[in-house]
Image: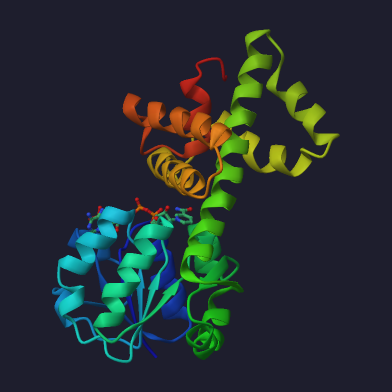
Length: 279
Ligand SMILES: NC(=O)c1ccc[n+]([C@@H]2O[C@H](COP(=O)([O-])OP(=O)(O)OC[C@H]3O[C@@H](n4cnc5c(N)ncnc54)[C@H](OP(=O)(O)O)[C@@H]3O)[C@@H](O)[C@H]2O)c1
C-alpha cells in the first residue's frame, strides 16, 4: 500500500521504519528536510504532491497540523485517501481539520497513539481509532498490522480519551518526582524510596519511571510536549465542565521546566529536577 508520513520527529520516524518493515511504499515529508536523511521511503518535496492511500499526520501540535494543511496538503489529490491525525491534538482541532479534509474528498480518522517511538517501531503501541466506524473498519487490517487497536467512537471522544490518558500518566509522573524530592530533601536515599514503592501498588510505576527521573536519558518524550498535552487536557476538561485542578498543577510544572530551558529533555527528569531536590 502507498502510505505517506507527514512529520518525521521521533514518532513519525518510528512509524516510517515500521511501515517500511511491513513492506509498504512509504512517502515522507517534514518541515525540516534534513530529518528525512537516513530514513527509508521516498521524500516528497511539495506537500501538494503527496499521493497515498493512507496519509499519517504526525506533527507536534494543533498549530503544526494547521500549517501542514495550509502549507499544501489541502491542495493535494485527497480523493479516496484516508488521512489519520496521529499526534496528540485537541478535540476542537481534530474536528475542524476533519471538516476541511473531508471537503477535499478524504476520509478522516483520529488515531492518537499510546506508547513511545520504540513501541511504534516494534509494533506494540496502542492506536486509539476514532471517526466514522465504516472508515475505521475499512482500514482495520492495516491498523492492526501497526499494533494494538481500540476503536473509541467519534473524533472528539477519541481525542479526549488520549488527553485523559496523558493527563493521568503525566500527572502521576510529576507527582512521583515531587514525592521523591520530598523524601530526598530529608536525606532519604532514592533506593529506599524505590524499595518502599516496590512493595506496594506503585511497583510498576517505580520500576518504569524512577530510572528515568534519576538519570539523564535521550528524550523519547520531551517536557515541551508534556506541557502541550497537559495544556490541551486542561482545555478539554474545562470545555467538558470538569475543573482541571491536578492537570493544571502538572501543566504548570512542565511549562515552568520548559521556560527554564528543559523543554527538549525527557519529561520525567525535566519535571523532577526542576524541583531541585531530586538527586
Ligand atoms: N514521543 C512520544 O513518546 C509520543 C507518544 C505519543 C504521542 N506523541 C505525540 O506525537 C506527536 C509527535 O511527537 P514527537 O515526539 O514525534 O515530536 P518531535 O520529535 O518533537 O517532532 C515534532 C514534529 O512536528 C514537526 N513540526 C513542529 N511544528 C511544525 C509546524 N509548525 N509545521 C510543520 N511541522 C511541524 C517537526 O518538524 P521539524 O523537524 O521541522 O521541527 C517534527 O517533525 C506529538 O503530538 C506528540 O504529543 C508523542
